Amino acid sequence: QKYLAVIAAYDAEFKSWERRATKIVRRYRDDNRNQSGSDSSARFNILWSNVQTLVPAVYSKLPTADVSRRHGDNDQVGRVASLLIERALEYEIEHYPDFRATMKFAVQDRFLGGRGVAWVRYEPHVVREQDVPEDGLQITEDSDDEELGATEAPEQADIYEAPQDESVDPTAGEVEVQEEIVYECAPTDYVHWKDFGHNIARTWEEVTEVWRWVYMNEDAIIERFGAEKAKSIPMDSSPEPLSGRGAKQDASQARICELWCKTTGKVYWMSKGLPDFIDERDDPLGLEEFFPCPKPLYSTMTSDTLMPVPDFVLYQDQANELDILSDRIDGLVKALRVRGVYDASQPALQRLMTEGDNNSLIPVDKWMGFSEKGGLKGSIDLLPLDVLSNALTQCYRAREDIKAQIYEITGISDIIRGQTSASETATAQQIKGQYAGLRLRAMQEEVALFATSLLRMKAQIICTKFQPETILQYAAAMQMTEADQQMIPQALELLKDDPLRSFRIEVAS
Image (cartoon, rainbow, N blue to C red; front, side, top):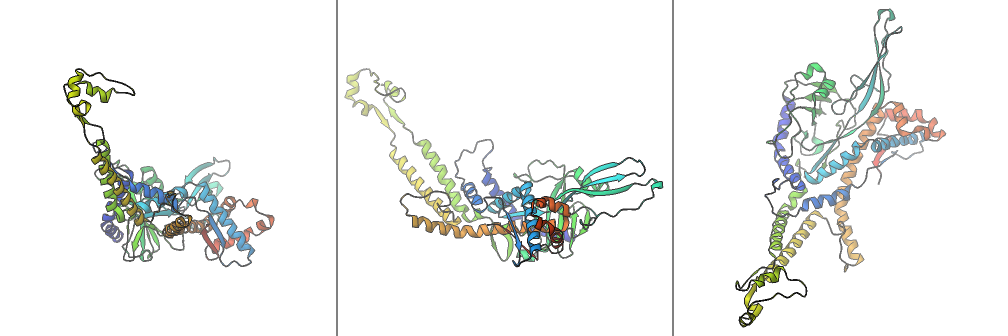
């Protein structure tokens, strides 16, 4: 009940932010238009344009790990250890696509709703072998001991220690069960901004509980918690669609909360439909900051709340004016057509506008009477287009002015958008580039710090949970020099005992 109250307080506090973020995402996707097509108003999706410009400006390529000795002294064992962990991180980042997708979606969420979240975990894949003595049948069972979220294999406190052999009496016909890790990895999961939460706090340093909601089908529930507990877990949920709670949902999954409490040092799994915890465990990862997620990527923040202000909110009034002007421009363009009236007694005049071609003449009956009435000028009158064209020109100018206001608010100059004027000097362009770089540099540093925190967590999991053989395989230790290979045993011990205090793990610039 204590943690359910914390979750309820978060839901009440961040409800308005979630509604706002949902509207922004729908506007980015242009889902506000009527799906039937009856809404024909024209819009200028400046939000999509800005996000597509800023995301590659602050995150354009996959991060590269840079591991070095913290103090740079002449420690050859430390050099080999940093080389091992750097190469292992490189393999993890490049071989598994989860890190690439997580970074992409987290950065995108930062520029839409204002918060991007990622989650790390340890995933060992275990093979269980049941050996029957004296010509018995050997049964091998593949098992994926992936916990919900970032946990290690059940009852497996130290991965470096070999499983304890249970002595059995061969004459008794008992079965000895051995476990062997086939391979292991440290995935990085993307967490949707609706599925993440924390206790109410002013700054991230004051946060003591974080959680994420995970949707699991029946097979995953049985594999993770067992068939007995699976019977009591309600299977009545699914990820909420973007259109809202009133939309039709396929309620065939269980919504499980994985909550990490720094105060108690434990991890809890719960469901709102159950009075007790589904599972409860001590700190399974032993990370330096305890939480399996770094500080989220935030947009505009203040020191009195962790509720971010999305960037679009700061220029939404100008964006609405832009839509109004775009709709008026569309109407003026449609109205900018040659239209007029003509003398009904001369039906040939209608053919003049529809059939007339270059060097073509259309005959007119009773030419003398037609010429006495003033000829063509006296028999046809066209709607003047100068008023419409002037209004259209003014709308175009007003739209450009509003776009300039938006770019001034967001800091997106024409240099970043790849546009410039031929009359500008190189010095003027350099000044604009430096001005834009000042605002972009802060965003780039935040993204780099976010990626660095993820790499540090992955490095801790690799050092403390992975088997030495796995680290050597990931790092391709056989390709290292013979002198470095001789120091590998000492380097592995150094990584296991002190993975972060002796090394500096950063994102390569």
